[in-house]
Image 1 (cartoon, one colour):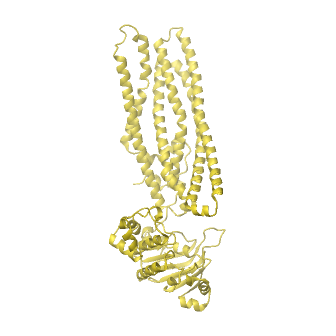
Image 2 (cartoon, rainbow, N blue to C red):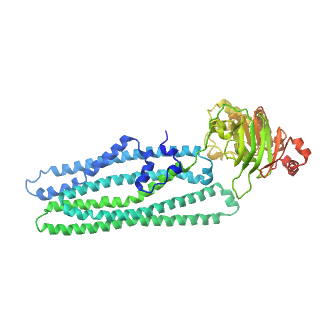
Image 3 (cartoon, rainbow, N blue to C red):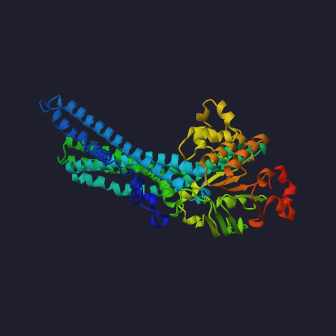
Length: 593
């Protein structure tokens, strides 16, 4: 069960400004378990209430302890050991309870964030890099939760300690306590001013860190091209420029955080000197005993530690909130794919494009321009055209990886927007020129999204000409393919993707250069398997080889997003139009068309 913020929208969740409002914003993720919160609160209260007992021991010890028969000898060590034992146990319970709250809250937030990534509109992935998203889900919220829990523990413990010590000071000498109380407005002003600056710098630091991570990601993914074109120097300068900017922000953050401690300590020194002066005046009138004065000064000096901690808590509290808020903003601002309600177990495969246009950028020509086409169930359509003709854009409309700007697309007479998204995508299997593999077993990659039927997986791999490879693999179907299957050749990766499409057995097939990475013999075997699979199924093939084109029921020739010609291979050659020109340029030799 996901926490409520998952359903929020940007309009309904304006970004709060106060610290309390921002804490309430993340509360739905960290409000459980209740018993852990109770244990943390009780532990913090007991820890704070025992703080004044230490200076309270000073007064009887100094006033009567050094007089014969004044105090029993055993009472002092027993009281000290008891006090510190209770304090240690309370501190342990409070920290463990808050750690449990933080870990469970972090887990719930990560679950919600990952679920949002899985259902987010594809515009999210155009606007944010993969390094930024992974950094937010894995590192940012973890670092934020750790900092925030530590800060809240400090805030609760030291605030209660401060109140307990002030109460004890009022009990001892209310006049001197009023002098001490004048310290707090000044400390509050310092903390408010520097916290505001810290938050601004922290947000800038997050953006700078994301930019630096993106540079690293780019260079790791394109390392061969970088070296081939001798671009190491330019990339090093780029990295150093961003790193230098991040370093400056870090120094600004450190300066703002470091300024809090000396400023609060100076204010504490002023209050301490004033208290001692007034106490010395009072002692001349015998209004204060030695023990009472020592207890008061001890309690007052003990105020310095919680005041110091509270002055320093703004830095981790601000950084922790900013990091976690980045995760909350992902949940709140990432749009979710829209879905209709229509569903059927298996579509017939009738597809219709009616005056469809797709515009990615208003400054550039349309990727599809008033495109219309009807495809009958079981028909094989080959899409042919030069690079940028709109072939991939057209097939990406079907599983709704992109949305049309104008016009309508229907499957079995039902607009794609009316289909339940899960039911719609169940109708399609796709093999593209860019094959991605999970770092999992061969069987899991073939049966992606479904239950693993090992016999069926093996049949599909054999049909994709990978039977010999599986037999030679160390663990057969259970062999790991590695990170993005980098241990496999390009042809092997392509054939696993084909086996995946065979395994899904969907009524509509999308083949985007499905045989581009295969040698001649492997292509022949896979084409035979694909021909058997394509029988009775609607198939759209982005064709780059004559062997695929000549078997198609119809060939659709595209150019700059428009439909130029439709017909069989022989009909289009006889027309001597755009298709015939592409054929003469090398389509029959397997070159890109």
